[in-house]
Image (cartoon, rainbow, N blue to C red):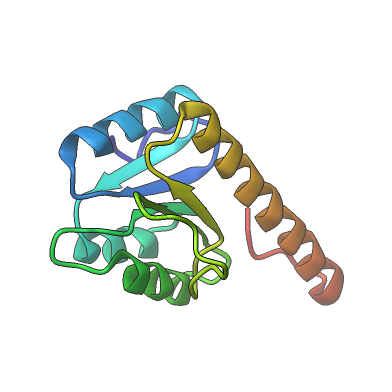
Length: 141
């Protein structure tokens, strides 16, 4: 999936997963929901993609050769206002790690995925409105 689809009207979502089949499935599901999806398989590609702009990053915690939680914090630092969803087979910790806005425990349903994306998007929108109220300008879509 490529983030250059101009006919989409939804969120710009970055999918970071080293499993090609998982990346493809997530890209297809999110694209079908009219989101603009960029899917990458490693941390370096994710860092480059987030600089190009995205609203939400869906990050596999157990990336081959990379720590997805370290990546989540790095992406949040590179793109203030980015919503980050951690995807993992591990149970949700009592406290979300730095840079992580939501936790999806595998296996999860398409419904759980879409509900989580919507919740993070809603939170980001509220933050954008709060920023606009404080500063008179809006920095996030």
